[in-house]
Amino acid sequence: MSSQRTLRRATLRSTPISDRTPQPLKHKSPETPTGPNSSEAFSAEPASDEEKLVDGPSTPPRKKVKIDSQASTLRGRASPVTLDRPAGPHSTNAPLRTPRGSRLVTYTPEVLNSSPSKTGIPRPTTSTSQLLDQACAHLIQAEPRLEPLIAKHHCHLFSADGLAEVIDPFQSLCSSIMAQQVSGAAASSTKNKFINLFQDDVKDVASTDNPNFPSPAKVAPCSVPFLRQAGLSARKAEYIKGLAEKFESGELTAAMLINANDEEILEKLTAVRGLGLWSVQMFACFALKRTDIFSTGDLGVQRGMASFYTGKKAQAKAKGGKWKYMSESDMLQHSAKFAPYRYVQCQR
Image (cartoon, rainbow, N blue to C red):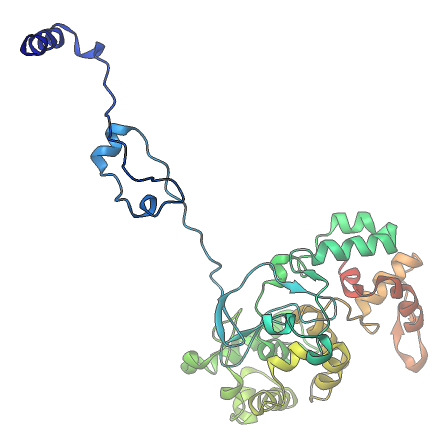
């Protein structure tokens, strides 16, 4: 044995270092199984840095999955906002933020496990990741001439990303009132001034796209002269104060906007001072993300339909002295085949 060791040492001394082949380390086989079904496989201590260098590169560590930064509370329980949720054309497809900061969605597990006759909410027909594709397929089938327009103009509003946007109903309706009969720049300036009135109460706000927008609880007690400091007219200040009082009293709630059908949404919101039919229809489409709200009074919709079906853009004076591009009866007749995605069609 000693002569073999002497021979091996002599051989190593006479062999250049660059020609020496490293010998792999030999590990003892474990006495117990270490496969994926064995608890030992998960409890074994990780190899040291030195062992990793000897044994070669190790398996790359798993990347950390980043959860959507928009945390939500569904029915008061914390949960991440997912991009794929059950959806339906006659349902509120946007997550809504309540004045207290929690978030609501239409199709909770309780709703999905209950019958529509009990909840008053129709069964979901699709998901938020598939709603736009399903709507486009329906529109093209109903009117093949829409296909190149659909291919050219992506509808972000009803895409998965658009449907993931969390909406503060109070802020959205206040913004609608501020924007009435003024330019976009003037409405934006008024909104910023309105927010600045409540800068000392930032901790009390419950907003999504603008974290500084005041809650109904802060706006309701304010006087009309105080609100007018934002550049609001006396009438608009009254409207916003009245809207805040309705949210604060519970007459208007995010839950109501979740549970109500299309007709109930229009009926309940048009009963609020300062909210006309067109404003409520735009809120139902752009904020609540309801796909079948069809506004025959919208001049943009009228002009688009007149151009598509008649090739004419000239206005025609209808009964009552109002200018229209297309009559209401013609609009309803042409749009019937696009239900329940009539507003998706209007976005083209």
